[in-house]
Amino acid sequence: MFKDIRLKANFGDYVDKYELNGEREEENEKRYICYTYLSQIQPARLDRDFDLLDEICDSRWEDLDIIGFAIALNDQLLTTATDIDDVLQIEKKGNFELYLLTYKKSINVDEVLSAIKNEKEDTEAAEIIQYMNSQKIVAKWEELPTVNLIIITDEVKDALIQKKEAFVQKTYQINEEKLFRIAKANANEYKTILNFEEEFVLPNKGGEATVVLCKAKQLIDILKNEDDMIRLNLFDENVRAYQGNTDVNNEMIKTLREDPENFVLYNNGITIVCNGLERKAKTCEIEDPQVVNGCQTCNSLFRAYKKKMDLSKVKVIVKIIQTSDEVVTRGIVRGTNRQNIVYEVAFETIRQFHKDLEDFFNVMKVSGFQKVYYERRSKQYYFDSKIKPYQKISFRILIQSMVAMYMNRVEISHRHESKLIEEYKGKLFVEGQSFYPYYVAALLTANLDYLVKKEKKFADIKNYKMHILFLLQELNMGPAPDINDKEEIEKYCKKFMKLLSDIKFENLVMIAADRFRKLIERWIKIKGSNYRFAIKDKPEFTEFMLEELRGNTKRTTTNSIYHGTVLNVNTDKNGNLYGFISCKPNNIYFNDLDNPGMSPSYVGKLVSYKVAGTGKATRGINVKLI
Image 1 (cartoon, helix red, strand yellow):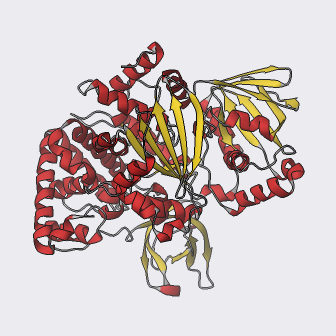
Image 2 (cartoon, one colour):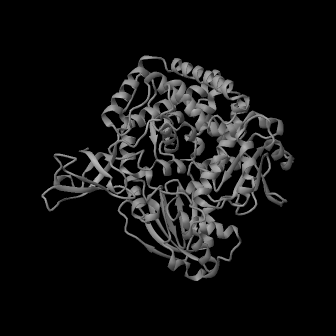
Image 3 (cartoon, rainbow, N blue to C red):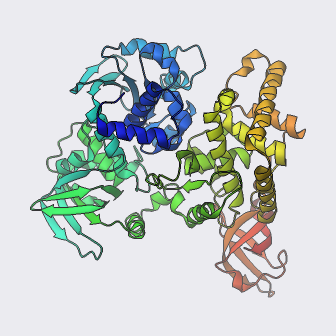
């Protein structure tokens, strides 16, 4: 049991928050240590991804004297081997970091990694290690993987670095006081001091605001923690994470190396929003800082620092604004992030659709179920003690459940959200779509997570929850209508919600789980024992489920009804109206012959439509104002 009274209090809050009071205290303590330390790597990820934390704290590691094991690629905690492809698709090159947490002071890292890699039972960790060491992925390593051995003990020692043939080992010793400081930093409850060269004070009605010119080293001092890691929680409010080896970031590194004096002229600097700001001489004391613009600059500087580049001639402009007004913060985020490259993915959850969806969740309630909340921004409900972790749905979880339930693509629903956003852009989270299917998906996911976590009888389906979601819908409601048919999908979802309020949810899950077990038995009987593996990501198994449930393998498509904004309406030489609807890559032509009743008033308005014809003859029909 923890001795530090402050850490003990934090631990007690964690146990209450995650409803772990019925579990063994020793197990809860191990879980809390892993949660706290690894939340530095990818802030907020483990607040809701219970399955990943279970995998990290798997009891199988106990025989290896390990209390937790995790793998990250470019600061993304990996869930499956396919996450590697998804991350590298964006960033091309990658840095792998492995984390071994232990109480034992002497651990043979080579033996532990070998044992995990050759684990006979089916583990995601084994598959990830095997894949990251494949010839295909090794070719994309930016440098040797780093294995971080974190020893929890009464002593604190400086990091010990050993370069080995296949990896670089870093050994850390941390005590309870250090763990407590990490927990406070994760909650962004800390103060930091930025030293600077020059200052220009800005007018700010709500608080302090200043622009400073500082040396790169002075900025890096507030970016890094005690273990010389970048404080990733500094970027919780940023619209995008570090993008890695993009042309822009590589150009920044090149400037830092070859033309350091002019870096300040070429770079827009960074913007920090904070809850408290106090200026004294050539220092700023900043309370609870958040970098809302300049994530790429900060990470590129830190990357150059870690590569031991000479940054003595590099200077950076930093704008620091004190405000506790969320509206002001949002305005600063939007106003300081105008680069076109950001909008495609990074701004997804600050689009109006997501804001309206969040409001919709807040007013919805189904009898017999806890409310669910759409946490579209990192740690949005972190400090609201009334909202339990399982009631919060992140964008990652929401898009995964939507792909499983309404796109009928269960086999890819576990993929990284960046991959899913790319594949379903223009098909999901589209203006004019009903919010009901998103709410039903979130409601089922949150309650299924909670049930599987509490009831040991569902332990065997823990890794197949997306399949169970799909079955819950299919067995009780049949195939869903097209998500773009607003009237029909709302009827369908409201009927489903009524059914859910009338029947005990656990009974519905029991039926779905039993059916899933029988489907697996039949699948293996037909295909052979070798087919019991990798069911989760096999499209053939999804098609098998469809055949067994529907009698065919037809998947509901999402292409019958589209949405777009009318760009213009004109009159041809015969007096007929025609116009174009916004669509990528080519705008959609439509006319009043196919769409009686269309008028010039359609310009600038959102419409639904279907598509007729092919190739250059494609045109919009059944065009209706939304």
